[in-house]
Image 1: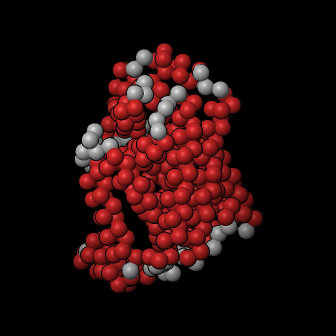
Image 2: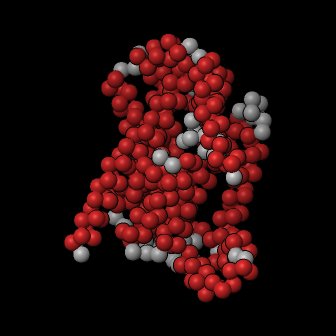
Length: 317
């Protein structure tokens, strides 16, 4: 248990080590050379990706018979960013399940499954792109390619097992249920039924998955344009497959929002194209600001507004 608590520190240690090896004056110069307007546009460039993701989520919500507006699911997404930012491992992002339940009136189990499906599709599509990148750069990181293949295969198998009610119920019961809780069998069975209420079929997830792949590629293409602000000259084909590898590695639970592992991977892979370490780090920090910092700030304001609104409704009632 203590090991799990200290795991995120590993990423921080890596980040501090990277800073200690760089010329900080050069790093400052890298940022000073960026046009302020272009820098701000780069931070907000993730907005189209969020809209694409929200459209994908709306499709899954509709298939799941969970009715919330496009605007609300978008707000919910930003709330998840905020809670994910302020909690270790981003676990607070699952708070959006509660907000989804409150808005839709559906069971907490059904809303949890919906969020689980969305996250699984996002991770699977990212992995599918990352596999190509891992293969391209397997000479430098030979263990990543088989690791990605293993992860992709395991998640696909688990998804197929879980989404089918007959196999899913058996799997969940064997995994989580113990004879010690036999007295709660009726409640447990009710929870399981709620989990599988209106659950989409595999074929219902094909279109959202295709949209997800488009969304990732669109976002990585935007980042390619942003990288030019840091005088990074990497062929588009190579660049577009570096980022999913970096993104997946940064999701490992040994860091705070990818800090440290993301920078180490970017510096390592960008060095194959003779990109100075300071430029690579500068790009990584701007990527972090666009991916987490900006959405989390927006999510904080939305969370405050939604909490205030719900409190007012409760007082009125």
